[in-house]
Amino acid sequence: EDNSGVEEIRRLFRGRFEVEREIGRGNFSSVYSGLYEGKPAVLKILYVEGSESKAEERLGYFLNEIRLSGVESPNIAQIHRVGRREGR
Image (cartoon, rainbow, N blue to C red; front, side, top):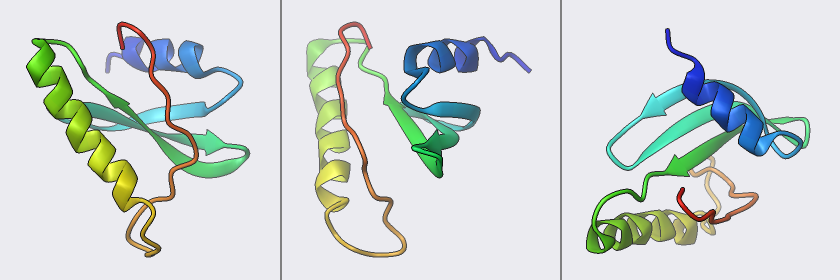
């Protein structure tokens, strides 16, 4: 198993999110399990490569997920932080 992607994510988020492993990968993002402030959590990394219109479409889907996170339900994850990094 290639852990190079996981190692890069560990370096990028060191001190903010303790990455344990990748738990999913799709067309738009990768999802990692780990700890945030000592509690079990997941980290979702959105892919924005490609044309500007495709990147904006993906960002739109992601922003909808963020808006839905305001709904209180045991089936919807709580969002702790949202950020953007150039080239990511």
